[in-house]
Structure formats: structure tokens, C-alpha cells
Amino acid sequence: MGSAYLCGVNEVSVGTDPASLAWERLLAKVGAAVARKHHRILAEHGLTPTSMGLLEALDRREGLSHRELAARLGLTPGTLTPVVDALEEAGSIRRTRDRRDRRIVRLSITSTGRDRIRDASASANAAMRRCLPEPAPEHADLVRGYLLYVLAAVDDRPDA
Image (cartoon, rainbow, N blue to C red; front, side):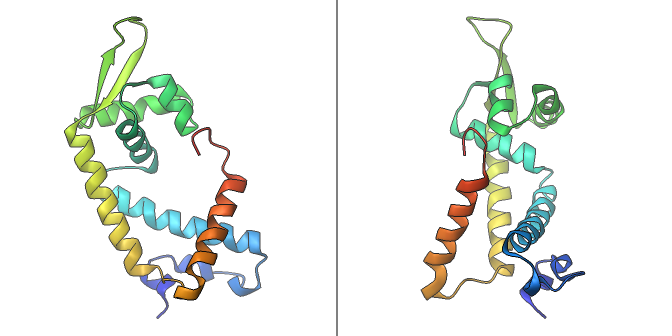
């Protein structure tokens, strides 16, 4: 039984033999399979990738406006509203009016939100470590370097 099956991402092998795929197609399939696994783990904590990204952004920089946060996450403010509503209702974030401009709503993470990040991250990291194979020590730097190169080449988010 291969590690892809253990991760619950055996969809990678459905259809075309992955070994015969072009690099860009193989990388896309691997990325999608890893993302599906990560999404399932976050869901166990009542989070989505968007809500986790929102909490992580606020953990790094407190007091962002709704509009600033949406831009950092590559979303429209309207798309982000239900996520903000759900996180506020769960006690993970707090909304406050900007004192200088009452039209602006600032978002802050709460201790509950920080606990959720810590728990979900620990769970995701442990699960992914259990199912993803480590590259051979002599290849680890090369694999990491290549993945970072690919990420830099394709990630067009402003905070990437």
C-alpha cells in the first residue's frame, strides 16, 4: 500500500499513469491531492482554507480592515463577509470600528482564534508528516528548492 493511499489521495493514480504525465500536469495533480487532504483536516477543526488563511493573516498583522484582508487573501470583500461572520460568531475574531474613520471595520484575532490556528496547524502538520514521504536526504534540498522556485513562478498574490 503506497503513501498516496495512506493519505487518502489515491485519486492521483486514477486515469492516466502519473509517471507518464508532463511535469506541469503531474505537479498540478500532486498539488490538488495534497490540497484535498489539507482541506479535510481543516474541516475537522471547523475551518476552511479561507478561514484558516484569514486567521493566519490576522495573527501576523492585527487590525487589518475587511478590504485589506480581502486583498491579502485574493478575494472580494463580499466573498469574505460570510467567513468573517462565521469566525466572529465562533469567537475567533472581533470586529471594531476604526476610531479615525468610522466607516472602516478593523478585524482582530482573539485568543480563541489563535488556539484554533495552533490546533489545526498541529493536526495538519502531523497528518501530512504521517502520509507524505520524506525525500532522500541527498535530494531534500533539491526538491525543496524546486518547489520554492515553482511557487515563486506561479504565485501572484500580493503577499506571496
